[in-house]
Length: 140
Ligand SMILES: [Zn+2]
Ligand SMILES: [Zn+2]
Image (cartoon, rainbow, N blue to C red; front, top):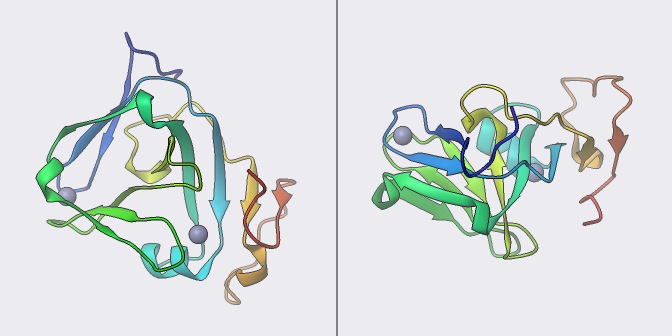
């Protein structure tokens, strides 16, 4: 589905305390194979999608959102009740990267590239899916 102000996409964490809304189509989506995403998700890669901050709003549970700010990266926001990851900042502070797994239903976009394949997990081959691959961060 394509999000709009009249027909927003909604999402949130697993315990339901944090809810948010996306009011425009996502601008890009990707898989990230970096070590941080492996730690954060407990799996081989993460899936995210970028939206302009102006098209994103927290509807509830804002007081339960915490963020880990790595010294050399963007803050990673999660629900302090259930630990589920929600979104991250991005190199451009005008944008936010939503975790695709936090979206209810179809986000209306599919991952278009894989980044940080240089640190891909040894225990799971990268699928031969034809997506562009970047050794490190994708060029924004
Ligand atoms: Zn939660
Ligand atoms: Zn990553």
